[in-house]
Image 1 (cartoon, rainbow, N blue to C red):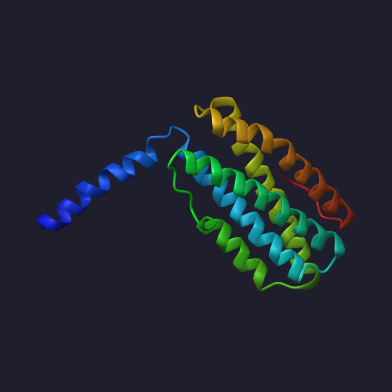
Image 2: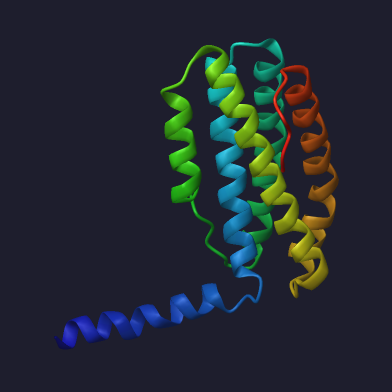
Length: 167
């Protein structure tokens, strides 16, 4: 029992350091979203039925890998540990996409991308408006226009495919 208590006491400062950044949830959510986008983008390149979906997936891998690397660099300077996988919900979406094929895959991917980009835009705008970490706010400010461009592109792909683009 004493050794367990000692481990908990020793681990507590590490947790406190990670949680000491007022924007730690932003870093976590942004990292999970970025990882999810790369995973889904790779899947779209592999399973996409239309060239537009394949091309969009390639753009997601390229742009979100770059953003992920930038976020990792910022987090490293602050001793913030970032997640190495997407959230449970994001992984569930990927699992659903993995079993689909053809037009069904494309439609589900497009809809999931509209939702994911909507959620990311909300996350970035919230950080810009109320974040306390100057580096996190700067990351959000530079990343927002890219994510908004992705949203415009995926909504265009949705319109071309006859999919209502609800965000």
